Image (cartoon, rainbow, N blue to C red; front, side, top):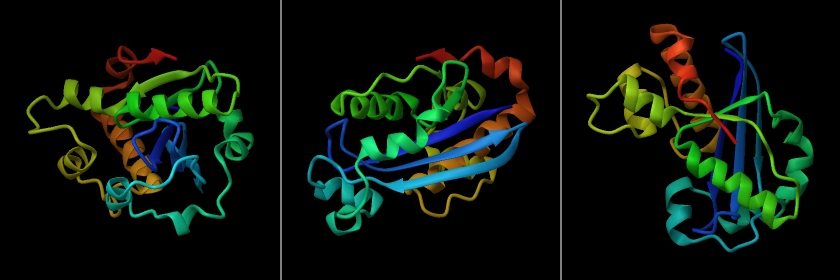
Length: 177
């Protein structure tokens, strides 16, 4: 499989408040690279969000804004590219909201959600949160809610599912964004 696992962390409840982003590139079912950046959000950091991901105002004060980050990563978002996320509706919404906020062209790509694949393939789990699925599959998730660690875990989940269930069962769940 060829895909990119994506994860955003946000500063607040506003969808355009990205404060970190990670991409993990997989080519021929092998790790092929990664990208990580803090992002200076357009909103202040909420206490609640900071408690979840551990990022604070001082961490992102000198970080690039999303429109600057986009210049580095937009090449990865193409109509024929598969972008994977655990709870993809959240990450896809953050991406679309950031693009809209900065008046950038929308991104069009194929999307696959590992929450949905996990619900389908592991229906007996008590829930399908990232840490639960990782524990079930024996995947190390050292820093949950760190965008890079979450992206790596997401990619490992999909690769484990590919190995166990094959690509055909996963392709049925791909959406076009």
